Image (cartoon, rainbow, N blue to C red; front, top):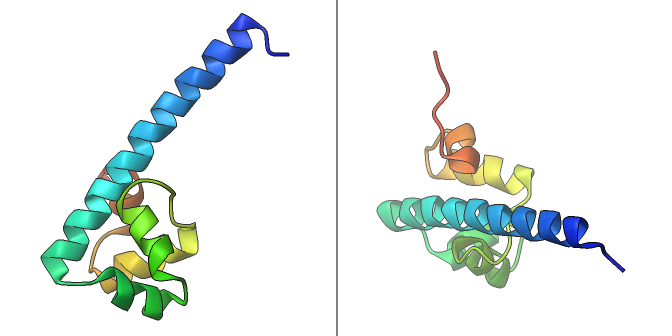
Length: 90
């Protein structure tokens, strides 16, 4: 059984992770729309199901790093920005 401190720490991490997952999904979805890329086409290119891509675009799950890297290349985006929302300092 979790004590109250452990439970509240877990809840805080879950809320933070939810925000990060949703922010990544929003960046990904905007990039898909801007580039006219469908979930089905991306799924075929990545060798995953369309459902995986839809889950990423809706913030249900997060794509693995290798998928993020390939998506960033396909969408002509910086992978660091796609994953974090931050630009790299020169």
